[in-house]
Image (cartoon, rainbow, N blue to C red; front, side, top):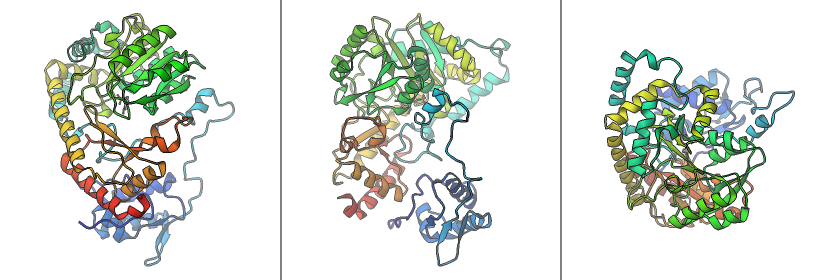
Length: 494
Ligand SMILES: Cc1ncc(COP(=O)(O)O)c(C=O)c1O
Protein backbone atom coordinates (compact mmCIF):
# COMPACT_ATOMS: atom_id res chain seq x y z
CA UNK A 1 0.00 0.00 0.00
CA UNK A 2 1.40 3.42 -0.86
CA UNK A 3 1.70 5.89 2.00
CA UNK A 4 -1.22 8.26 2.46
CA UNK A 5 -0.39 11.84 1.62
CA UNK A 6 0.12 14.15 4.58
CA UNK A 7 -2.98 16.21 5.34
CA UNK A 8 -2.96 19.93 5.97
CA UNK A 9 -5.20 19.53 9.04
CA UNK A 10 -5.35 17.11 11.94
CA UNK A 11 -8.21 14.69 11.37
CA UNK A 12 -7.00 12.07 13.81
CA UNK A 13 -9.66 10.13 15.63
CA UNK A 14 -12.07 9.76 12.71
CA UNK A 15 -13.17 6.15 12.69
CA UNK A 16 -15.82 4.91 10.31
CA UNK A 17 -17.80 1.77 10.90
CA UNK A 18 -18.02 -0.10 7.58
CA UNK A 19 -21.37 -1.54 8.75
CA UNK A 20 -23.12 1.85 8.68
CA UNK A 21 -23.66 4.72 6.24
CA UNK A 22 -20.12 5.96 5.63
CA UNK A 23 -21.01 9.34 4.14
CA UNK A 24 -23.29 10.11 7.07
CA UNK A 25 -20.61 9.10 9.58
CA UNK A 26 -17.99 11.25 7.88
CA UNK A 27 -20.40 14.17 7.68
CA UNK A 28 -21.10 13.84 11.43
CA UNK A 29 -17.42 13.56 12.36
CA UNK A 30 -16.51 16.67 10.37
CA UNK A 31 -19.53 18.61 11.59
CA UNK A 32 -18.66 17.84 15.20
CA UNK A 33 -15.10 19.08 14.67
CA UNK A 34 -16.34 22.27 13.05
CA UNK A 35 -18.79 22.92 15.87
CA UNK A 36 -16.35 22.30 18.69
CA UNK A 37 -13.65 24.41 17.08
CA UNK A 38 -11.17 21.65 16.22
CA UNK A 39 -11.67 22.72 12.61
CA UNK A 40 -11.87 26.49 12.95
CA UNK A 41 -13.34 28.84 10.35
CA UNK A 42 -11.02 29.31 7.39
CA UNK A 43 -9.48 25.83 7.66
CA UNK A 44 -8.87 24.32 4.26
CA UNK A 45 -10.16 20.76 4.20
CA UNK A 46 -8.13 18.08 2.44
CA UNK A 47 -8.97 17.27 -1.15
CA UNK A 48 -11.59 14.56 -1.42
CA UNK A 49 -9.09 12.24 -3.10
CA UNK A 50 -6.62 12.55 -0.21
CA UNK A 51 -9.30 12.10 2.39
CA UNK A 52 -10.77 9.06 0.68
CA UNK A 53 -7.31 7.49 0.51
CA UNK A 54 -6.60 8.18 4.16
CA UNK A 55 -9.90 6.78 5.40
CA UNK A 56 -9.99 3.90 2.93
CA UNK A 57 -13.38 4.89 1.49
CA UNK A 58 -14.53 5.89 -1.98
CA UNK A 59 -14.14 9.44 -3.21
CA UNK A 60 -17.86 9.46 -3.90
CA UNK A 61 -18.56 8.92 -0.22
CA UNK A 62 -16.36 11.86 0.72
CA UNK A 63 -18.08 14.04 -1.87
CA UNK A 64 -21.52 13.12 -0.46
CA UNK A 65 -20.39 14.07 3.06
CA UNK A 66 -18.96 17.36 1.75
CA UNK A 67 -22.18 18.05 -0.15
CA UNK A 68 -24.23 17.70 3.01
CA UNK A 69 -21.90 20.02 4.95
CA UNK A 70 -22.04 22.46 2.06
CA UNK A 71 -25.84 22.32 1.97
CA UNK A 72 -26.05 23.04 5.68
CA UNK A 73 -23.62 25.94 5.48
CA UNK A 74 -20.67 24.44 7.38
CA UNK A 75 -18.23 24.62 4.50
CA UNK A 76 -17.81 26.68 1.38
CA UNK A 77 -15.73 26.57 -1.75
CA UNK A 78 -15.66 25.57 -5.30
CA UNK A 79 -14.43 22.57 -7.15
CA UNK A 80 -10.77 23.02 -7.98
CA UNK A 81 -10.36 25.91 -5.58
CA UNK A 82 -10.38 24.11 -2.24
CA UNK A 83 -13.02 23.60 0.41
CA UNK A 84 -13.00 25.77 3.52
CA UNK A 85 -14.73 25.74 6.88
CA UNK A 86 -16.98 28.81 7.15
CA UNK A 87 -16.70 31.27 10.03
CA UNK A 88 -19.57 30.24 12.26
CA UNK A 89 -21.37 32.78 14.37
CA UNK A 90 -20.80 32.27 18.06
CA UNK A 91 -24.46 31.40 18.58
CA UNK A 92 -23.95 27.89 17.34
CA UNK A 93 -20.33 27.39 18.32
CA UNK A 94 -20.25 26.19 21.94
CA UNK A 95 -18.23 28.61 24.05
CA UNK A 96 -15.72 27.23 26.56
CA UNK A 97 -17.52 26.17 29.71
CA UNK A 98 -17.65 29.16 32.00
CA UNK A 99 -18.67 29.38 35.60
CA UNK A 100 -22.10 30.98 35.83
CA UNK A 101 -22.31 34.36 37.49
CA UNK A 102 -22.66 35.76 40.09
CA UNK A 103 -20.27 33.89 42.42
CA UNK A 104 -18.27 31.04 41.00
CA UNK A 105 -17.46 28.63 43.82
CA UNK A 106 -13.94 27.33 44.38
CA UNK A 107 -15.08 24.00 42.95
CA UNK A 108 -16.29 25.61 39.74
CA UNK A 109 -13.07 27.55 39.42
CA UNK A 110 -10.92 24.46 40.00
CA UNK A 111 -12.85 22.61 37.31
CA UNK A 112 -11.50 25.04 34.73
CA UNK A 113 -8.10 23.39 35.23
CA UNK A 114 -8.79 20.04 36.83
CA UNK A 115 -10.80 18.02 34.38
CA UNK A 116 -10.26 15.13 32.01
CA UNK A 117 -9.78 15.52 28.28
CA UNK A 118 -12.74 14.38 26.18
CA UNK A 119 -12.63 10.59 25.73
CA UNK A 120 -11.22 9.32 22.44
CA UNK A 121 -13.92 8.75 19.88
CA UNK A 122 -14.94 5.60 18.11
CA UNK A 123 -13.93 1.98 18.37
CA UNK A 124 -10.47 1.36 19.83
CA UNK A 125 -7.48 1.66 17.56
CA UNK A 126 -3.91 0.55 17.90
CA UNK A 127 -2.00 2.20 20.76
CA UNK A 128 -5.00 3.70 22.55
CA UNK A 129 -4.04 3.76 26.21
CA UNK A 130 -6.11 2.25 29.00
CA UNK A 131 -8.29 -0.01 26.85
CA UNK A 132 -8.12 -3.81 27.22
CA UNK A 133 -9.02 -6.40 24.56
CA UNK A 134 -12.70 -5.48 24.20
CA UNK A 135 -13.07 -7.92 21.31
CA UNK A 136 -12.58 -10.87 23.67
CA UNK A 137 -15.23 -10.16 26.27
CA UNK A 138 -17.73 -13.08 26.45
CA UNK A 139 -20.83 -11.02 25.73
CA UNK A 140 -22.97 -14.11 25.18
CA UNK A 141 -22.27 -15.34 28.68
CA UNK A 142 -22.81 -11.87 30.10
CA UNK A 143 -26.11 -11.58 28.22
CA UNK A 144 -27.24 -14.99 29.49
CA UNK A 145 -26.41 -14.17 33.10
CA UNK A 146 -28.01 -10.79 32.72
CA UNK A 147 -31.21 -12.24 31.23
CA UNK A 148 -31.37 -14.81 34.03
CA UNK A 149 -31.09 -12.11 36.66
CA UNK A 150 -33.67 -9.80 35.13
CA UNK A 151 -36.18 -12.51 34.25
CA UNK A 152 -37.14 -12.94 37.90
CA UNK A 153 -35.20 -10.63 40.18
CA UNK A 154 -35.80 -11.11 43.86
CA UNK A 155 -37.95 -8.22 45.14
CA UNK A 156 -35.52 -7.98 48.07
CA UNK A 157 -32.86 -6.74 45.66
CA UNK A 158 -35.02 -4.16 43.92
CA UNK A 159 -35.40 -1.60 46.68
CA UNK A 160 -32.62 0.62 48.01
CA UNK A 161 -29.58 -1.58 48.45
CA UNK A 162 -26.54 -1.51 50.69
CA UNK A 163 -24.48 1.62 49.86
CA UNK A 164 -21.32 -0.45 50.36
CA UNK A 165 -22.40 -2.68 47.49
CA UNK A 166 -24.10 -6.01 46.89
CA UNK A 167 -23.09 -8.34 49.77
CA UNK A 168 -22.56 -11.35 47.51
CA UNK A 169 -20.28 -9.38 45.20
CA UNK A 170 -18.25 -8.08 48.15
CA UNK A 171 -17.77 -11.65 49.44
CA UNK A 172 -16.53 -12.73 46.03
CA UNK A 173 -14.18 -9.75 45.67
CA UNK A 174 -12.68 -10.51 49.08
CA UNK A 175 -12.10 -14.14 48.11
CA UNK A 176 -10.62 -13.10 44.76
CA UNK A 177 -8.15 -10.69 46.37
CA UNK A 178 -7.15 -13.32 48.92
CA UNK A 179 -6.32 -15.84 46.21
CA UNK A 180 -4.90 -13.59 43.53
CA UNK A 181 -3.10 -10.89 45.54
CA UNK A 182 -2.49 -12.44 48.94
CA UNK A 183 -4.60 -9.61 50.30
CA UNK A 184 -6.55 -10.90 53.28
CA UNK A 185 -9.57 -8.73 53.82
CA UNK A 186 -13.04 -9.03 55.18
CA UNK A 187 -16.05 -8.27 52.91
CA UNK A 188 -16.94 -5.61 55.48
CA UNK A 189 -13.83 -3.69 54.36
CA UNK A 190 -15.06 -3.49 50.76
CA UNK A 191 -17.04 -0.68 49.18
CA UNK A 192 -18.16 -1.22 45.58
CA UNK A 193 -17.69 1.85 43.39
CA UNK A 194 -18.26 3.04 39.85
CA UNK A 195 -14.75 2.14 38.77
CA UNK A 196 -11.37 3.09 40.19
CA UNK A 197 -11.96 6.76 39.48
CA UNK A 198 -14.85 7.02 41.91
CA UNK A 199 -12.83 5.11 44.49
CA UNK A 200 -10.01 7.66 44.18
CA UNK A 201 -12.47 10.53 44.25
CA UNK A 202 -14.06 9.20 47.47
CA UNK A 203 -10.60 9.09 49.07
CA UNK A 204 -10.13 12.72 48.02
CA UNK A 205 -13.52 13.78 49.34
CA UNK A 206 -13.15 12.09 52.69
CA UNK A 207 -9.47 12.25 53.58
CA UNK A 208 -8.26 15.58 52.22
CA UNK A 209 -8.86 19.02 53.73
CA UNK A 210 -8.43 22.11 51.56
CA UNK A 211 -4.76 23.17 51.64
CA UNK A 212 -3.44 19.69 52.53
CA UNK A 213 -0.40 18.45 50.63
CA UNK A 214 -1.03 15.30 48.59
CA UNK A 215 1.91 13.42 47.07
CA UNK A 216 1.37 11.98 43.61
CA UNK A 217 3.69 10.29 41.16
CA UNK A 218 5.12 12.63 38.53
CA UNK A 219 4.64 11.66 35.75
CA UNK A 220 1.43 10.01 36.84
CA UNK A 221 -2.28 9.43 36.42
CA UNK A 222 -3.60 12.93 35.94
CA UNK A 223 -7.22 12.00 36.69
CA UNK A 224 -6.20 11.08 40.24
CA UNK A 225 -4.38 14.39 40.64
CA UNK A 226 -7.50 16.21 39.44
CA UNK A 227 -9.68 14.41 41.98
CA UNK A 228 -7.36 15.42 44.84
CA UNK A 229 -7.06 18.97 43.54
CA UNK A 230 -10.87 19.26 43.43
CA UNK A 231 -10.84 18.51 47.16
CA UNK A 232 -8.52 21.49 47.59
CA UNK A 233 -5.25 19.53 47.81
CA UNK A 234 -1.90 21.07 46.99
CA UNK A 235 -0.40 18.50 44.66
CA UNK A 236 3.23 17.55 45.27
CA UNK A 237 4.69 15.72 42.29
CA UNK A 238 7.22 13.07 43.33
CA UNK A 239 9.76 11.76 40.83
CA UNK A 240 9.62 8.19 39.58
CA UNK A 241 12.73 6.17 38.70
CA UNK A 242 13.46 2.57 37.77
CA UNK A 243 12.30 1.42 41.23
CA UNK A 244 9.08 3.43 41.17
CA UNK A 245 8.17 6.40 43.36
CA UNK A 246 11.35 8.03 44.69
CA UNK A 247 10.83 7.69 48.43
CA UNK A 248 13.88 9.87 49.18
CA UNK A 249 12.25 12.70 47.22
CA UNK A 250 9.01 12.04 49.09
CA UNK A 251 10.85 12.34 52.41
CA UNK A 252 12.05 15.80 51.35
CA UNK A 253 8.48 17.00 50.89
CA UNK A 254 7.75 16.26 54.52
CA UNK A 255 4.24 16.09 55.76
CA UNK A 256 1.49 15.08 53.37
CA UNK A 257 -2.04 14.02 54.19
CA UNK A 258 -1.88 11.27 51.64
CA UNK A 259 0.24 9.68 48.91
CA UNK A 260 -1.35 8.25 45.77
CA UNK A 261 0.66 5.47 44.08
CA UNK A 262 0.40 2.78 41.38
CA UNK A 263 2.90 0.25 42.79
CA UNK A 264 2.28 -2.84 40.67
CA UNK A 265 2.66 -1.00 37.35
CA UNK A 266 3.39 2.70 37.57
CA UNK A 267 1.18 4.76 35.33
CA UNK A 268 2.44 5.70 32.78
CA UNK A 269 6.13 4.68 33.00
CA UNK A 270 5.35 1.00 33.64
CA UNK A 271 7.92 0.43 36.42
CA UNK A 272 7.18 -1.67 39.51
CA UNK A 273 7.67 -0.26 43.00
CA UNK A 274 10.48 -2.29 44.59
CA UNK A 275 9.96 -4.08 47.89
CA UNK A 276 12.47 -1.79 49.63
CA UNK A 277 10.52 1.27 48.44
CA UNK A 278 7.20 -0.29 49.49
CA UNK A 279 8.52 -0.67 53.01
CA UNK A 280 9.95 2.85 52.98
CA UNK A 281 6.64 4.23 51.83
CA UNK A 282 4.77 2.48 54.62
CA UNK A 283 7.35 3.76 57.07
CA UNK A 284 6.95 7.29 55.70
CA UNK A 285 3.17 7.07 56.16
CA UNK A 286 3.63 5.99 59.74
CA UNK A 287 6.09 8.80 60.54
CA UNK A 288 3.90 11.47 58.97
CA UNK A 289 0.57 10.03 59.99
CA UNK A 290 -0.48 9.86 56.33
CA UNK A 291 -2.76 7.73 54.22
CA UNK A 292 -1.65 5.79 51.16
CA UNK A 293 -4.00 5.24 48.24
CA UNK A 294 -2.78 2.18 46.32
CA UNK A 295 -4.26 2.08 42.81
CA UNK A 296 -3.97 -1.48 41.46
CA UNK A 297 -5.78 -0.64 38.22
CA UNK A 298 -4.22 -3.32 35.99
CA UNK A 299 -2.89 -5.84 38.52
CA UNK A 300 -4.34 -8.80 36.57
CA UNK A 301 -1.87 -8.22 33.74
CA UNK A 302 1.42 -9.72 34.86
CA UNK A 303 3.43 -11.65 32.27
CA UNK A 304 6.49 -12.91 34.14
CA UNK A 305 7.87 -13.02 37.64
CA UNK A 306 5.90 -13.22 40.85
CA UNK A 307 3.98 -10.08 41.74
CA UNK A 308 5.11 -8.29 44.86
CA UNK A 309 2.69 -8.13 47.77
CA UNK A 310 0.40 -5.10 47.51
CA UNK A 311 1.04 -2.34 50.03
CA UNK A 312 -2.35 -3.16 51.51
CA UNK A 313 -1.10 -6.67 52.34
CA UNK A 314 2.05 -5.28 54.01
CA UNK A 315 0.18 -2.60 55.94
CA UNK A 316 0.08 -3.24 59.68
CA UNK A 317 -1.33 0.13 60.62
CA UNK A 318 -4.50 0.52 58.61
CA UNK A 319 -3.10 3.34 56.48
CA UNK A 320 -3.52 1.87 53.01
CA UNK A 321 -6.69 2.21 50.94
CA UNK A 322 -6.58 -0.26 48.08
CA UNK A 323 -8.31 0.57 44.77
CA UNK A 324 -9.32 -2.12 42.27
CA UNK A 325 -11.39 -2.11 39.11
CA UNK A 326 -13.20 -4.47 36.76
CA UNK A 327 -12.89 -1.94 33.96
CA UNK A 328 -9.51 -3.13 32.71
CA UNK A 329 -10.44 -6.80 32.67
CA UNK A 330 -14.01 -6.41 31.34
CA UNK A 331 -14.40 -3.00 29.69
CA UNK A 332 -14.23 0.62 30.89
CA UNK A 333 -17.88 1.46 30.22
CA UNK A 334 -18.91 -1.17 32.80
CA UNK A 335 -17.99 1.35 35.53
CA UNK A 336 -17.47 -1.16 38.32
CA UNK A 337 -14.64 -1.10 40.83
CA UNK A 338 -14.03 -1.28 44.56
CA UNK A 339 -12.12 -0.03 47.55
CA UNK A 340 -10.61 -2.18 50.29
CA UNK A 341 -10.55 0.03 53.35
CA UNK A 342 -9.28 -0.08 56.89
CA UNK A 343 -12.27 -1.57 58.74
CA UNK A 344 -13.18 1.60 60.63
CA UNK A 345 -13.34 3.66 57.43
CA UNK A 346 -15.57 1.34 55.40
CA UNK A 347 -18.96 2.36 56.88
CA UNK A 348 -18.03 6.03 56.56
CA UNK A 349 -17.10 5.65 52.90
CA UNK A 350 -20.39 3.81 52.33
CA UNK A 351 -22.28 6.67 53.99
CA UNK A 352 -20.56 9.23 51.78
CA UNK A 353 -21.27 7.17 48.73
CA UNK A 354 -24.94 6.90 49.65
CA UNK A 355 -25.20 10.68 49.55
CA UNK A 356 -23.89 10.76 45.99
CA UNK A 357 -25.76 7.92 44.35
CA UNK A 358 -27.08 5.56 47.04
CA UNK A 359 -25.27 2.59 45.53
CA UNK A 360 -24.15 1.04 42.24
CA UNK A 361 -26.88 -0.23 39.96
CA UNK A 362 -27.95 -3.73 41.06
CA UNK A 363 -27.96 -5.47 37.66
CA UNK A 364 -24.26 -4.95 36.97
CA UNK A 365 -23.28 -5.94 40.49
CA UNK A 366 -25.47 -9.06 40.51
CA UNK A 367 -24.33 -10.20 37.07
CA UNK A 368 -20.67 -9.63 37.94
CA UNK A 369 -21.20 -11.70 41.10
CA UNK A 370 -22.60 -14.56 38.99
CA UNK A 371 -19.80 -14.11 36.45
CA UNK A 372 -17.25 -14.59 39.22
CA UNK A 373 -19.10 -17.33 41.09
CA UNK A 374 -19.49 -19.48 37.96
CA UNK A 375 -15.78 -19.30 37.09
CA UNK A 376 -16.12 -17.10 34.00
CA UNK A 377 -14.19 -14.25 35.57
CA UNK A 378 -11.07 -16.32 36.22
CA UNK A 379 -11.29 -17.82 32.75
CA UNK A 380 -11.63 -14.39 31.23
CA UNK A 381 -8.63 -13.08 33.17
CA UNK A 382 -6.53 -15.89 31.71
CA UNK A 383 -7.80 -15.10 28.20
CA UNK A 384 -7.12 -11.40 28.61
CA UNK A 385 -3.65 -11.91 30.04
CA UNK A 386 -2.71 -14.25 27.17
CA UNK A 387 -4.10 -11.82 24.60
CA UNK A 388 -2.39 -8.78 26.10
CA UNK A 389 0.94 -10.66 26.20
CA UNK A 390 0.61 -11.68 22.58
CA UNK A 391 -0.35 -8.13 21.56
CA UNK A 392 2.61 -6.80 23.51
CA UNK A 393 4.80 -9.22 21.55
CA UNK A 394 3.34 -7.96 18.26
CA UNK A 395 4.26 -4.42 19.24
CA UNK A 396 7.76 -5.35 20.36
CA UNK A 397 8.37 -7.43 17.23
CA UNK A 398 7.36 -4.69 14.80
CA UNK A 399 8.56 -1.59 16.62
CA UNK A 400 10.98 0.40 14.41
CA UNK A 401 14.37 0.19 16.12
CA UNK A 402 16.09 2.99 14.30
CA UNK A 403 13.90 6.03 14.98
CA UNK A 404 16.22 8.93 15.75
CA UNK A 405 16.00 10.12 19.34
CA UNK A 406 13.89 7.19 20.57
CA UNK A 407 15.29 5.12 23.42
CA UNK A 408 15.06 1.33 23.13
CA UNK A 409 11.73 -0.15 24.17
CA UNK A 410 11.95 -1.24 27.81
CA UNK A 411 11.19 -4.74 29.06
CA UNK A 412 7.43 -4.98 29.56
CA UNK A 413 6.41 -7.48 32.23
CA UNK A 414 3.04 -6.11 33.17
CA UNK A 415 0.09 -3.96 32.22
CA UNK A 416 -1.55 -2.79 29.04
CA UNK A 417 0.86 -0.12 27.86
CA UNK A 418 4.53 0.70 27.51
CA UNK A 419 6.51 3.87 27.52
CA UNK A 420 9.39 4.77 25.19
CA UNK A 421 11.55 7.73 26.14
CA UNK A 422 12.31 10.34 23.50
CA UNK A 423 15.19 12.84 23.63
CA UNK A 424 13.23 16.10 23.29
CA UNK A 425 9.77 17.55 23.46
CA UNK A 426 10.05 18.78 19.88
CA UNK A 427 10.80 15.23 18.79
CA UNK A 428 7.86 13.84 20.77
CA UNK A 429 5.54 16.33 19.08
CA UNK A 430 6.95 15.63 15.61
CA UNK A 431 6.65 11.85 16.03
CA UNK A 432 3.06 12.14 17.23
CA UNK A 433 2.07 14.61 14.50
CA UNK A 434 3.54 12.40 11.79
CA UNK A 435 1.72 9.38 13.27
CA UNK A 436 -1.57 11.29 13.44
CA UNK A 437 -1.27 12.22 9.81
CA UNK A 438 -1.46 8.57 8.86
CA UNK A 439 -4.27 7.95 11.36
CA UNK A 440 -2.18 6.31 14.10
CA UNK A 441 -2.97 7.33 17.65
CA UNK A 442 -0.04 7.98 20.00
CA UNK A 443 0.16 9.62 23.41
CA UNK A 444 2.91 11.93 24.55
CA UNK A 445 4.56 11.23 27.90
CA UNK A 446 4.81 15.00 28.36
CA UNK A 447 1.01 15.05 28.95
CA UNK A 448 1.35 13.08 32.16
CA UNK A 449 3.41 15.63 34.10
CA UNK A 450 2.17 18.23 36.52
CA UNK A 451 2.29 21.66 34.93
CA UNK A 452 4.62 23.07 37.60
CA UNK A 453 7.17 20.23 37.37
CA UNK A 454 10.80 21.18 37.78
CA UNK A 455 11.88 18.49 35.34
CA UNK A 456 13.14 20.19 32.15
CA UNK A 457 10.66 19.95 29.28
CA UNK A 458 12.89 17.76 27.15
CA UNK A 459 13.27 15.23 29.97
CA UNK A 460 9.52 14.80 30.07
CA UNK A 461 9.29 13.57 26.49
CA UNK A 462 8.29 10.10 25.40
CA UNK A 463 5.63 7.99 23.79
CA UNK A 464 3.02 6.01 25.70
CA UNK A 465 1.52 3.14 23.72
CA UNK A 466 -1.39 0.96 24.70
CA UNK A 467 -0.88 -2.45 23.12
CA UNK A 468 -3.91 -4.48 24.21
CA UNK A 469 -6.94 -2.87 22.62
CA UNK A 470 -6.79 -4.37 19.12
CA UNK A 471 -5.66 -7.72 17.66
CA UNK A 472 -2.15 -8.41 16.40
CA UNK A 473 -2.83 -7.79 12.67
CA UNK A 474 -4.13 -4.29 13.46
CA UNK A 475 -1.02 -3.61 15.53
CA UNK A 476 1.19 -4.80 12.68
CA UNK A 477 -0.70 -2.58 10.24
CA UNK A 478 -0.37 0.46 12.49
CA UNK A 479 3.35 -0.21 12.92
CA UNK A 480 3.71 -0.40 9.17
CA UNK A 481 2.00 3.00 8.88
CA UNK A 482 4.28 4.39 11.56
CA UNK A 483 7.39 3.16 9.79
CA UNK A 484 6.19 4.82 6.60
CA UNK A 485 5.21 8.06 8.32
CA UNK A 486 8.41 8.33 10.29
CA UNK A 487 10.55 7.18 7.36
CA UNK A 488 9.01 9.84 5.10
CA UNK A 489 9.56 12.55 7.70
CA UNK A 490 13.23 11.94 8.46
CA UNK A 491 14.00 15.61 7.96
CA UNK A 492 11.47 16.76 10.53
CA UNK A 493 12.37 14.01 12.95
CA UNK A 494 16.16 14.20 12.86
C1 LIG B 1 -3.76 4.48 36.81
C2 LIG B 1 -5.22 4.37 36.56
N1 LIG B 1 -6.05 4.32 37.58
C3 LIG B 1 -7.39 4.25 37.39
C4 LIG B 1 -7.91 4.23 36.12
C5 LIG B 1 -9.41 4.29 35.95
O1 LIG B 1 -10.02 3.11 36.04
P1 LIG B 1 -11.61 3.05 36.01
O2 LIG B 1 -12.00 2.97 34.58
O3 LIG B 1 -11.93 1.83 36.78
O4 LIG B 1 -12.14 4.29 36.67
C6 LIG B 1 -7.09 4.26 35.03
C7 LIG B 1 -7.67 4.27 33.66
O5 LIG B 1 -7.01 4.36 32.68
C8 LIG B 1 -5.70 4.33 35.24
O6 LIG B 1 -4.87 4.39 34.21
